[in-house]
Length: 430
Ligand code: ACO
Image: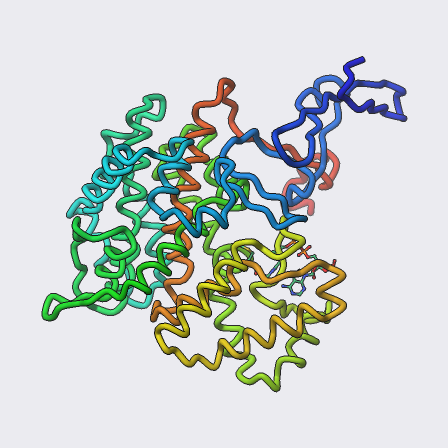
């Protein structure tokens, strides 16, 4: 009998098998049930993947109980304080922190891939002006595969690297243009002399008719937002990217599937939903009423920006962004009444028995919406900004998956509960 295993007996047949247990660097061990069906004729059933590890990964680790987040082993707090989004991109894709030369080369490559094919620019005029920018993102990101054929060979390491560079570099351009198009404004070209966040701000807010000055505090805060969203192991959008990739679809198609998944309010759409909720609450005096609604099971209302599938403690990203948020509000002298509501709501919810018992803490989205508001980012762009940050996570997880030794298409099974086999009845006899 292997030492690290569990014994499973099917009581209906008496058949017993050993399920090997595997242990990683950190985190819970996993039962390797890949042989379960072959040996016992039984599937596992785990809707929403509450107890299922879908892959091996050496990219990101989360301890939801302790509120720990590591990118390639480095704590998020250290990266937030000392690193930058582009350095984190290098770390996630290549697996190690860059030397000065490696970083300079990487920065040069990314800044020289920010332009998009002129034909792609024409896509924008096909969208309605009132389209949500995330709807535009889903379409345009998927369309990249129609323009960059030369890097679609998923079995070629260099092609994969070029695709990764293209996605990191072009995402801010695609995103800013989605916003500018919605306003009927010119779509500014990127500027290679600007940093990653600065370039995005330039494309979001500059006009050909006047100079645009980028405030360092704004660029720094935006870079931090990108960095905090860079990866989060096997969340819904990343798992979507991996599943799409398992069919050997090209990286642009896989990432556009991730963009679509991120859009939902239970995932990346929550930052936009937080602001809408705070506007709906309208006044500090209404908070108790909304907290009561959130606790009422017959009311679909939930406190947006609260709760997380993995974090049963304070989301470490929320702590960092909360602090940054206070700094930005003070430095930019923003007096936002929604922030007062948010602070009070957080205070009330954290003391409430319902939220304590269910371990519902503020997540990163609770503050990312408020900080982006202070930076004058329009609400409809909040999830788009999340998309820019998460692109490196998606492509790194895709790159890891596509180089695994055994390549299998992701194909979950099911518990069928429909009609038993029955015979077709001709229409005139029904
Ligand atoms: N407000 C009120 N009650 C909540 C909330 C909330 N925000 N979140 C969870 N609960 C309650 C549920 O009603 C459930 O109660 P029950 O056990 O009595 O039925 C319990 O807490 C567990 O909730 P689940 O929905 O089962 O937890 P799950 O892990 O499936 O969902 C999720 C996590 C989707 C994040 C959920 O907490 C939620 O909807 N939060 C609001 C949306 C949000 O902020 N999403 C952003 C997630 S972070 C990210 O994507 C970056």
